Length: 89
Image (cartoon, rainbow, N blue to C red):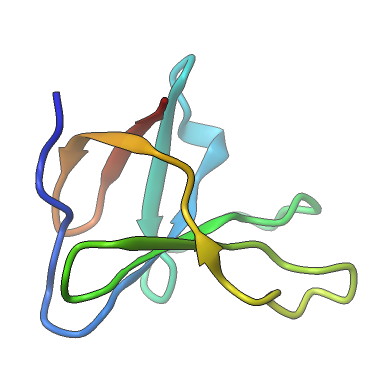
């Protein structure tokens, strides 16, 4: 089931909250407002532009974000103000 991307005015960056994943369902939370626990594993990010296209990012070896790339295809299973659940195709 595909749902519309969560849009809240300007682009919102979602970070992978892998601690909350449920099997093949990946959980994302707002990067700038969610209190993520410390992690040695980098958190993949998703950013939706105003047209609904998503780009993904990942921290590089020195923890700076690498250039964003088009996100791999996924279905949005649940979308709210502070929660995004997806399943990659």
